[in-house]
Length: 148
Image 1: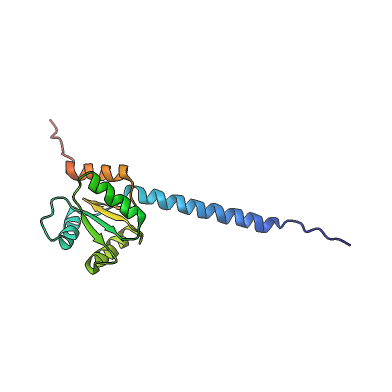
Image 2 (image 1 turned 90 degrees about the horizontal axis):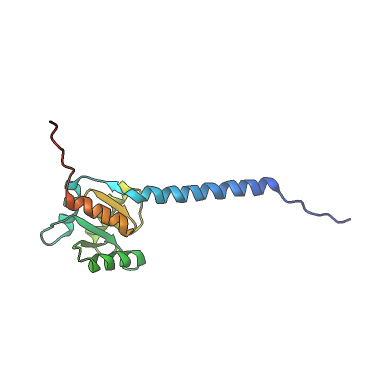
């Protein structure tokens, strides 16, 4: 008497649904990260001034670690574009670590890099998103046109 095992369709269906839910969660997390989290300009300036030893012209703070390849790519990009920023290594600088904890509570992410740029906090590094946030920072708040 030989028995042939029939596939367990219930388990396969459950696995397929679970995998689909996981993929949706991953996609949504990337979408959520895309636009950045907003903070006030005063908060951004406060973070920058706390970590800076000199005058802060533009509140751009890069929360990074030494071992993170995306952090290295971010810093290479900033240097190649001659963009001044504050390097905040969250593992080597206790004050940077504390401020990173504050920023990461706002974004909901503990990953690096996180970039405070004006009123935005970007998680990860996407040059197009960075340039958009930099443009917003440098162009200032929208001007209200007087009505006639």
